[in-house]
Image 1 (cartoon, helix red, strand yellow):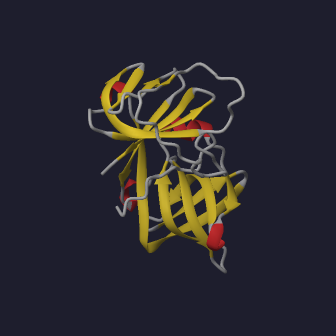
Image 2: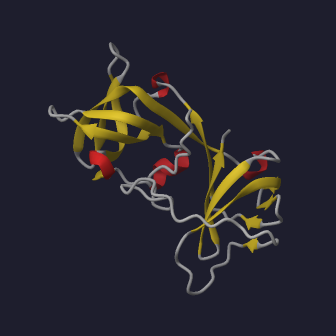
Length: 203
């Protein structure tokens, strides 16, 4: 893909809120430790980026020596290219689209949430820049004839989504920390010293 790294609109990544990425802070060259204990007074999310040197079930060590201590609630996801064929009823998706005069949503990007994100992101809709709408919703049905349109439901509402010709479809997958290979580039969100989420950046 061109490859947008989806910071998919989550609320711990932020949701409908959608995926507004917090201000990024890269680790300093000297080794640091980001632990799962809270630090008083800090509330803004810190973005830590780097390449993984070693990975275990409870800890990631980056190439610069930064250590990320992982808690039970830390979410690790990878985003990969997908196709309209990967869309199916029951999946929870984030849709970036412009509402058309007939009220359909013309989508330029659809991201399929991982199982862990689908449990924490509330359904809903909110305006974005340039007249776009962000919709977090469950797919109710797929148009079997065109295969490029589907219906979603959210917060008691229903909408028809039509994929634009150059629409990007992405799929997020939950990953266990020990499955992360050395050399993998990651971006972690840390709040009050707690590693909230880690996004694996695919090449």
